Every structure is written in C-alpha cells, then in structure tokens.
Length: 235
Image (cartoon, rainbow, N blue to C red):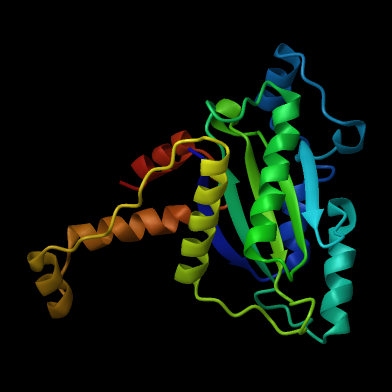
C-alpha cells in the first residue's frame, strides 16, 4: 500500500530542497546500472539530479523552489532559521507503481502533489520523486514551506497531528486509486509496562519503541528493506 514513511521538521528550507532535488548529486552507482539495464532514461532537465520527476503546488517550480520559498519567508518576515519546512516522505509499493515504467514516475509525483494540496492548500509545496534505494521503490520527498500564503503566520502543528492527517489523506488517495489500505494498529501498553514506566525502571518494550522511533528519523531510509536492516543493526 502507499504509505507515509515519515513526517519531520526541517530547520533549513534550502538544505531540505537541495537534498530532495539532488542537483549535481548523481544517483547511486547501482541505481545508474539498474536504469541502464532496464533501458530507462530520465528527463534531460533532471539528468544531473537525484529526482526523476518533480512538481509543486501554488506556483512552485521545484528547480528554483529555494528562491520562491525564501521570497515568501522574507515577505512575511519569517526568515528565522528554525523549523522552516515540513518534510513528508510518501512511498509506493511495487504492485502500485512500477519503477520500470517512466509514466509511473510522473504519476507518483502527481499523487504527491495531490497529497500536498489536500493537506496544505495555503502553503508552497515542492515534490520530488526518487527511486534510488533497495528495490528502487518510487517515493516522494514533499517539502512544505511553513509560511501561510494567506496570513503570513508560521505553521504550528503537533507532530502527532501532522502524521495522523497525512496518513488519513494518503489513505483517501489510495482508496481512490483502488489500492489496499491497512487499518492502523492501536498501540497497547500492558499493566506491567505501565507499572515499570511509573517507577522509572527499564522496559524492553519502551526501549524497542525508542529504537524504532530513532530509526524512523533517518531521512535516508525510504523502503522497508533498508528500514529493517538498520533496525537489525540497532539490536
């Protein structure tokens, strides 16, 4: 199913956008070989970028998004280098979008733009589609400028709320596409774990959650195989 892999804040809009576009940062060597083996060619405008498709909302040109984000931040005096952007990683299963089909590259990007429009209609958004990583699963890096275009105020949203809204909107899009949607599992704490937590004693379940949460913050992870491997290395 299409998933929201992570939702994180970014201190610097420029850094987040540079990473997502990946201009002058070639694809991993094995990805370049994979493209050649499958006779896949990127658009000329993106041949020196990691992104294989780009898009945006509210007039954003992803290639010059840095300048466009900065102009709005300056116009509303919101240039403080702290939590300038929200970053959403949206990933697609191989049975949903085929990385060996270049039309699905653009389709993935279009769905990322649709998600951004649903979630943040009054904010600038740039969407970059990647396929590097294990199995070359298509995934989007969605970068939202936190300055509201109507009010000039900074987006103030609890992380938990942002994640829940993103997942719900993503599920709506998945249903529209006819893709399977898995119902969320509610977290449960046993009475024993609750007692250990209250006493400040070690809980292996809390330790496990902490290791998973830390791994989820790694922005280089974009597929389950990599996620699983890193979790294994963390014990």
